[in-house]
Length: 398
Image (cartoon, rainbow, N blue to C red; front, side, top):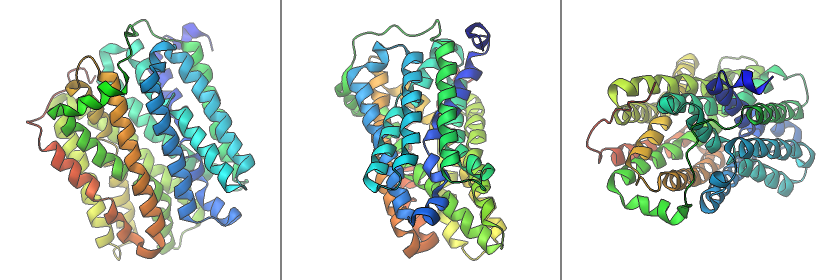
């Protein structure tokens, strides 16, 4: 496809590339149940692999922020290089899965490469469609969510094939993302890079009361989000088992629950134009926290009811994420927005590590009650947001 044709619809190209590139993120989780049967792993081992990916992303984000790499290399080029290297690291997992230490390294390298995919997608959006920043951000976060769910769809579509097939398909999609973004190139509105602020200015942003309140809400959101996504296949297997349905439906249900986050992001983006980002973030965080509270209490209720509650949770759990980004960009010091957002993302993703480990480790012992370990996230997030004065509209959300 020619670059000229791609430039007619740059936003569509970027969000699809984000979808394909971020399919690497949970590629191993998509085949988690198959790995348990083939290699004798438990949910704890799958949790460790997920944490390795998160750790790689955190390290990559801090490196990009500290070195100013995103300002020194063209956004499209860095995105394409990161997607290619991520595809290679993801494919390497297939070769080294039998050696636990090498499997962890492969997943960490995949996460490291994703630090050049997800954040650079946001920069590409601004370079092509700055007038639709808020609206585009909702779509971009939605595609990140759908990319997280995509490995479950790939597994559902290849259930009769060996587990490496969907993993390698994710790498193929990442290569396609790299190719299309490389052909698209950077947009004409790319901000001129100044002197790199560095991480120090990013951490100093936490001294600003409004930014600190937004960051606190985001940190609570992160504590819940990725641990929930990690548990979705286990929750789906439990409810389908109670309905005496085939395990082959588990990846399809997991894809549906996580993929609903796309609708949540877009819905939140539209509502933020009328209600403001702060109000939308509070409602979404409160709804996901309520689902977290109710799920174990309804353990003996109809499996269909719990599947419906899981769907609502999947819709709400990510709907606040674009609004946190918009609120943080508005409240951070104007001379260090990029570093402030990088630090906020890095700390938030660091908080996903203990929540994933705790829930995966205690799943067999606590069952559904393990979900209450996620509840402090929404509660503390809402407490932090309560320190902000009122709803703040996002005028460029569409």
